[in-house]
Amino acid sequence: MNKGTIFIISGPSGCGKSTLLKEVFSHLDKYFFSVSATTRAPRSGEVDGVHYHFITKEKFKDMISKDEFLEYAEYVEHSYGTPREPVETYINKGCDVFMDIEVQGERQVKEKKPEAVAIFIAPPSMEELERRLRNRSTENEQTILGRLSKAKEELSKASTYDYVIVNDDVKRASDELLDIILKEKKRTSERT
Ligand code: 5GP
Image 1 (cartoon, rainbow, N blue to C red):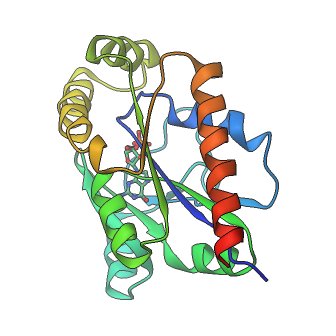
Image 2 (cartoon, rainbow, N blue to C red; image 1 turned 30 degrees about the vertical axis):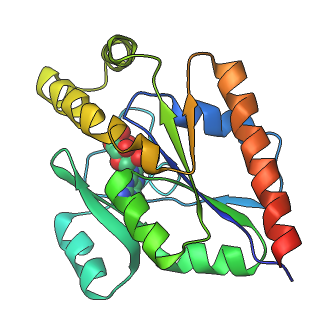
């Protein structure tokens, strides 16, 4: 059986990754979204085990010591990591695996899985990103400023990704994302 493809989706907080992913998932079958572990608190509406596994710092450290993460990183005062086991299980079952992770995590996954496809979602401008982060009203001022400064750092790494999509319009950007996914899936199946 063919293995699935790993799709790494990165982009600054507030650039619309989740919206684009939700849109493309409605056109795909046999996919798995990797649920990350994080030490940050849930936002309103976030469900444990669905959006993230919300865990304590101690549990996070314990998972690192047991080598249970495919990758992990610190992002604006919190830790985030991709549990390894579900990713391996699903790619071996032939499912495509999607992970929404930041740039340090992308590097680690690419080192371990060079065949993974890395896609960067960029906001149309920093002003628009700031507007979206503020409209979301989920973070305090300090966190918003931390995330904006992180966004500049992340945007400078976008060119190292296999693809960059500017999320200027949800329909256009999700169509572009879907085209890339379908093209890469075809390439994987031709290769194997
Ligand atoms: P948020 O707190 O807004 O949900 O996520 C903050 C950042 O952490 C986002 O850029 C998101 O892509 C990234 N992130 C979420 N899960 C993981 C993970 O498992 N590993 C890494 N490296 N980054 C993650």
